[in-house]
Each structure stands twice: as structure tokens, then as C-alpha cells.
Length: 195
Ligand code: GTP
Ligand code: MG
Image (tube, rainbow, N blue to C red; front, side):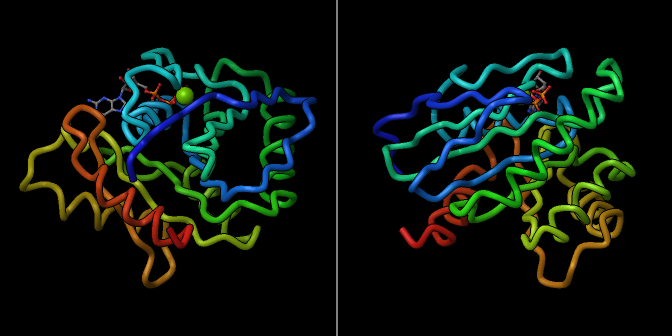
């Protein structure tokens, strides 16, 4: 897709009312620091529209990016961030759940995991939870540049097994440094949105 415009249109805090958009929404979930905002920037061809940080817990709102007035990218707050209190984690859990349940435009949830590591219990819960809410997550294995090429297939297998993915689940290796995987993810989004 040719990106003609990309704007952060809506920012939702814990108590905000979620927007009622009329274009397809594509959401990105994953633990803090996994690279959600970096992926969104890479897909939008923007260096820093989505704020990234080496400190986990940067995105603490649900951010809706309007792309070309044709679709929305939804940057969800990362889970598993230790410094956030249990009460706040619970509130965010409820907020994300509300979003998954209420959005009429949500077409797909991409679940991001770090290609280097076995999925955590939180990753597995998130995967199951997305399924439970009626979506089949598509996996993006981030930070591909951090492993050797020869390790790639082994790590993809480890992630599939760790999440116990349903048969036929797609998994895209991706690097926001090299942009490897970017075109394949866009193709997938275009297919899902029927563009
Ligand atoms: P939260 O907003 O805290 O939930 O984090 P996030 O998932 O949005 O992660 P973010 O995109 O801010 O990236 C976290 C850190 O990982 C940053 O320092 C990024 O530069 C780095 N990073 C993200 N993707 C990649 C990648 O593909 N390769 C490498 N080497 N670093 C990456
Ligand atoms: Mg972020």
C-alpha cells in the first residue's frame, strides 16, 4: 500500500470512550518492549510517529492511527510490564477486552512475540484470550535481526509450539531494523481488508 497519510487520530486512556470508526481496524498486541510501536512505524514508513522506547511501558494508551482514511492501526498497551500496579494491569485488561468485544471494525489482531525467546505465560494467555474473543491471532516474531539466519526455522517452531497455535496459523518473522517481513505483513493486511 502507498502511504499517503498517517495520523495519530485517537488516544484512549483507561477511562476513555472507544471511538466508533467506520474503517477496518488492525490491532497489534504483545508484551511491553516487544516492538509494537516500531512495527507500526515501519508499516507506516514513519520514523517516529508511534513513540518507541528502550524502556518498557512506553505505550500506555490505546492509540488509533488513521492510514490514508482507509484503515486504522491500533497500538495496544503492552502487557507484562512489572512496574505497573496490579490494579492498573487489571484496568487495562478490562479496557483491551472491551475493545476486542465491542469493536465492530476489528478485522485481525496481530500478536507480537520476540523471536529470540520462548513465549511467556503472558504471551500464551494473550493468545488464548484473543482466540476466546473470536479472533484468530496472526503471529509476528519480532527482532529477527537478533538471531542468525540458520536459527530462524528452529525459533519459529519454538514459538508455534510455545503458543500451541491452531493449525494454519500464520507467523511472520520481522525486523524493524532491516524491515524484513514488512511487505509480507502489508500483503496480509491488504488481503484481510479486501483492498
Ligand atoms: P511498549 O510501548 O512499552 O509496549 O513497547 P513496544 O512493544 O511498543 O516496543 P517499541 O517499539 O517501543 O520497541 C522497544 C525497543 O525494542 C526499542 O528500543 C526498539 O528500538 C527495539 N526494537 C523494536 N523492534 C526491533 C527490531 O526488530 N530489532 C531490534 N534490534 N530492536 C527492535
Ligand atoms: Mg509502544
